[in-house]
Length: 186
Image (cartoon, rainbow, N blue to C red; front, side, top):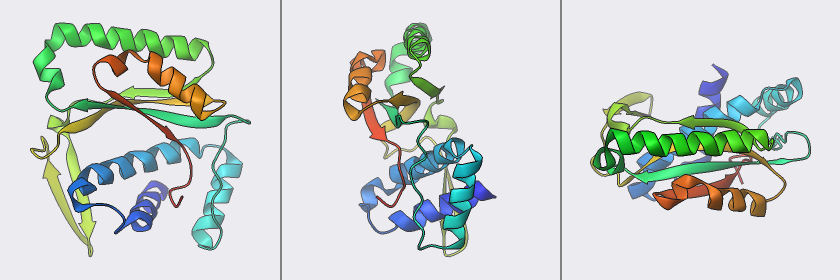
């Protein structure tokens, strides 16, 4: 229930601010951001702060830092047809490289969470407009890229997050986007 309210508030806050051609991808990214934000709001103080924001819209939530360290996300953005073209054997080799990369980050104390996503063939896009739900099953013909996975990191600075992204094996076959976690109204 709380996640549903969070998704609704994220969508409302960004409504009308994006180009229509990118709206489906941005809807998906907003949903991913909402789920990750809910994951980060695990401490009692963060939950209490968020409830106050729900009750009074004038109160703005503060980012939920973990200690004194900032959180950054590496989004793995890949071409939609890349996985099919390379095949399963090559895909497993690349996956093993990414697992070793995440183990290294975990050993260094930088990794908070990591997940790989399946292709968009099994994806569903959900839109609710004026109380009416619209579901669109994947694959999505107009999409040229998809989010293949993410790394949630503890970093001291943006520069450190960029340095980590530069060492990510995926940067050699797709794009690694670095994003700082924070409130959706900024």
